[in-house]
Length: 122
Image (cartoon, rainbow, N blue to C red):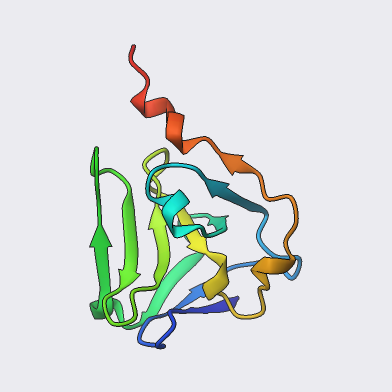
């Protein structure tokens, strides 16, 4: 387990991450993620738990209002999201996780959220 915190420390969470790090990391080019510019660590529904400061989390939603994007209402740091492709999992801002050095991660694949499969016309 690793500790996740926002910048001001009002929000803390526990994230289940192996010693090697996240099994899946990526960036996303959707309209919000490309503006955040963060690397997403993907974890399962039982691998993330807020342990302090849930009252300081603010929710942002747009378009279909399926995805849940959370940030600290004090410092503004985006901590995690629940993606609309699978709202049971979590996308973690890996820069908020202790011991993770996001600038040392090379070759991060890009998820094509700009052309999200749920947006495609049938």
